[in-house]
Image 1: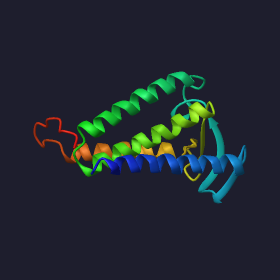
Image 2 (image 1 turned 180 degrees about the vertical axis):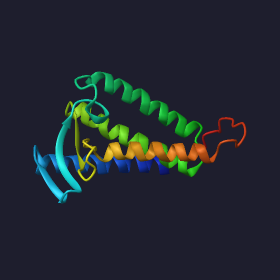
Image 3 (image 1 turned 90 degrees about the vertical axis):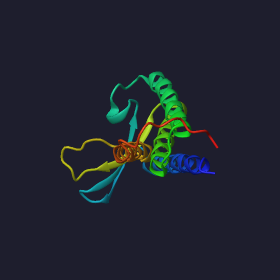
Image 4 (image 1 turned 135 degrees about the horizontal axis):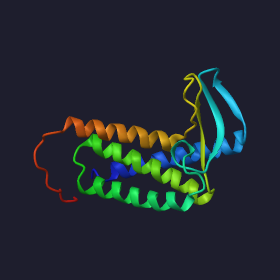
Length: 159
């Protein structure tokens, strides 16, 4: 029964990510709006690269790496993840990866729009999928740290 929870979390991340990007594209295309002045803006950005716009114009590399990465995380999730926190964390990573992969396939770029402007050195704009991947990775690292030394684990059987 546990198998449905990560699937629903990943699908939820994809849905919220894609809906938010559709709304931003429809109502904010090429523009910006201050939600909380000098703190948080919604700024429309077309990101053709990976995190923070690095390696732009390498769309197929990202697509291949995304498929491999999502597959590897999914395999680990359903084969080895035993704690609720690790399952949630990996579902967030998968959902975020799929959300951005959909953009790369459909648009040729990823739509970013969350812009924290209160931190002077923070110049990057990101989206829901990016946030899900980062939060998921942090939660997974926390789970690994919490379970260091739990003993030798063998792969569990998928129920």
